[in-house]
Amino acid sequence: MKTLLCLFLLPIQAFAVQIATFRADVTPPVGAPLCGGLVKPALGVSEPLLALGVVLLSDEKPVVLCAVDFCEIRGADHIHWREVLAKAAGTSAERVALHSLHQHNAPLVDNAAQKLLPEIGIIDAAATEKALAGVAANIEAALKAPQAVTHISTGEAKVLEVAGNRRVQVIDGKVGKMRGSGSKDPVLRALPEGLIDPMLKTISFWNGDKKLAALHYYATHPMSYYGDGIVSHDFAGIAREKRTQEEGVPHIYFTGCGGNIGAGKYNDGTPPMRPLLAGRIHAAMVESEKEAKRVPLTRIAWKHVPVVLQPDPEFPEERVMKVMQNTATSTSQRIAAALRIGFIRHREPIPFTSLHLGDDVCLIHLPGESFVEYQLFAQQQRAGGFVCTASYGDGVTGYIPLEHSFKEGGYEPTQAYAAPSSEKVMKQTISELLK
Image 1 (cartoon, rainbow, N blue to C red):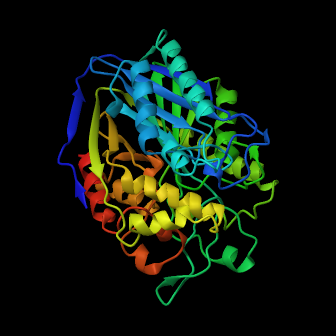
Image 2 (cartoon, rainbow, N blue to C red; image 1 turned 180 degrees about the horizontal axis):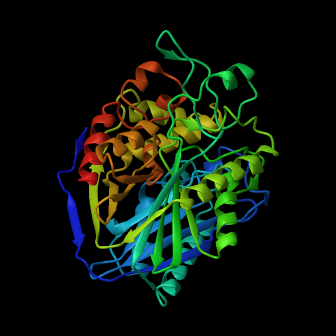
Image 3 (cartoon, rainbow, N blue to C red; image 1 turned 90 degrees about the vertical axis):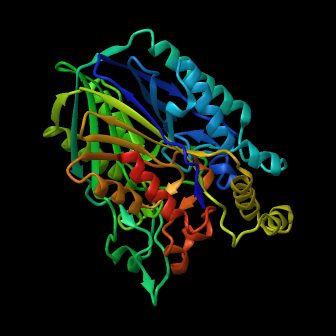
């Protein structure tokens, strides 16, 4: 496991900052694969999928923060998307933080996996390229009318009865049955929440007394139910859109380190639970801003650390290829094998980035399905500061558990592509980003 010894610190001196907000519809057409072909393809639409974000302008190159209602954007596609968005914003790709929310009734963007399994529908390449062009066009349009940012505000609130750790049943050091995003098992639902980050964090941008945009961060898998072919931005998207409609101001939601976190303790996976979960997220969004502290925005700085994570040696490419090529194997296993091969063959460094706002606020951007422990670790590095963590950046890594998680077993380590020693690299990089 190694980190490329290349840290870019790009400070922006005290000066006027401007913001442009963008919003684009990225809903897939009927028939498009969802979740990389692991669930039913799109049969209809419950709510549109959106790409939402901000562009921060200054004397240095712009910074783009973008959250997309997709399951994942992976590998070469994540690079391509960042390059296209960067061109639209007049910046460089390393200054684009691109994150999926990880809803499952939504596209997974991985053309490399599709080329490995051309007979199986993993991605509608034409539709996703059209969606990307739409996002870029919206960024270009938004930049024609940026607004001055004079202040930022920060606040947080506890989310009640949504998140629970999926790995709470540990017997003799091994993870037993797991509750996922939904569970009807009364035994699993009766178990404690386990380790979570209960707080939803919000940062808002202001021009004097005028609110311009709000960014929200919370760590959990954002699915109430899925697999029925009905495209949905699910409960996190519903809460976000309600806040936008209430205020007439863009509200943008980023999924935090929810790799081992889901709603299964409180969610039985039935349709009536979706609006209930949305209501709980919405309530925390509102509460987080009630006592928000507004302070002048005196400076911003961007950090970029390109990282190479080594593949898990327990899954050599030759063996994984045999699984993928075996037509007697289930479709889901073949797709999972193709996605793993995509990581094994991925040679480009994965971007880890952070945006510092003033002296105390830091927004940190991580790849994959990172475990919640990384988010809590980041907060510990800046005690007294305000740290917001977005995960689900480049999805090429799959899950990123802790090293001891592999000994405990359970679902996530079997779907983690990077080696167990990735924990050390992750924490080292997070510390660098927070300096």
